[in-house]
Image (cartoon, rainbow, N blue to C red; front, side, top):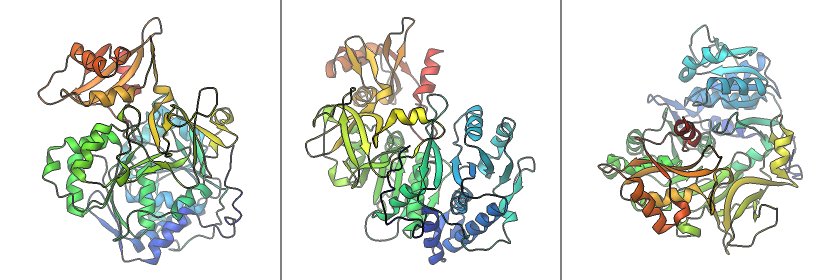
Length: 520
């Protein structure tokens, strides 16, 4: 495992303040400011939230939680989930989120593999708890608020008499922060071990435009990047407005009603906003920044978004194994690379990016290959999997598994995931290239392209398409369109019309689910 922040003499245990402690300190310092608005419209002040979280931390400590204990969260988008995350962090626990959208057997494997000592469940997941608990043996199960007795005791009620002040637990930069799991679309997900030191650095860089305090709308899971952005927003004096899930109409209504300044979306969710009929009648003037990323974005749809929202889109490229890698500012969206792709930005300060051929040799600017990253923010390794860690972490460099290239000015461009590449007779196809082209076809509203193998294990390009209103695309027409623009090897051999593209729990196209459905 690589712990490449250790050379920072300034970040020693005596001086170190963890990110959860930093957020709570910021909240407690300004107790009367609005901090969180729940999905039901209930407002919580910074002081109320900080006090409740400190009490919860003391209660967890009294129940045996300490440095190195694993606390797993079976939670949704609730303030209780945020509070539990911070409370576990300042108690010294290693935190694990059990993502909504994963099957119960997969969640059970995760709970067991990470040595869960305490499982916390909120109201959004009470219904899912009994099925999970039947498959695992967790020493302590508690609810975050009143809940079914069969699930566990209400730990928030039990914490009412605890001190509303930080616990005396010293957290160091080398202590475990948590284990994040990959999306789970290719089998049992890998556990990515992160440490306090690298995550704490995220709070040392500027966050957002100068001016009024940010007002962040959380419409995607707090267990993913929306949680990180919530941490930063609360630390920098802002407010977080929580929605249970992403609904484009509700998002647009909330932007207008709450005067939202900041919004995070994955590209497929951005497209849903653009396609919603209320987009033209919604007051979007409060928006100062729309962050997007998480998967390859369509240049066609991004340019459409720039026309609708104005020059406020910022692209982020990162991954759980490396945190933030590159950022493309709003004024840089005219950078265009291979196949008309928009850049994902230049590497952040302290982040090195090189493009390598399959054999490991470094490629010059303009040539496409595997993206490798070196920084002080890399993961510590995959939980209990030194074999997998050794495959991707070598000599301080992380092989991201992504394909892309750098231009002469150091801007990075993504093509696709290496594992998504389709090997066909005559060459290989990156699905995102075909997807972006299909989105320019007048009969296509949304699409996903994937490879399926036949009985002889040969791969074939399949296109899954949501038709545009009133249109019914035909395979021959789609093949001719793709052949004319990209070439014969890119043309889909099969076309599947669907009402919607299924998404994973993090909002990416769920190609495993599509493959399973098509193979069946």
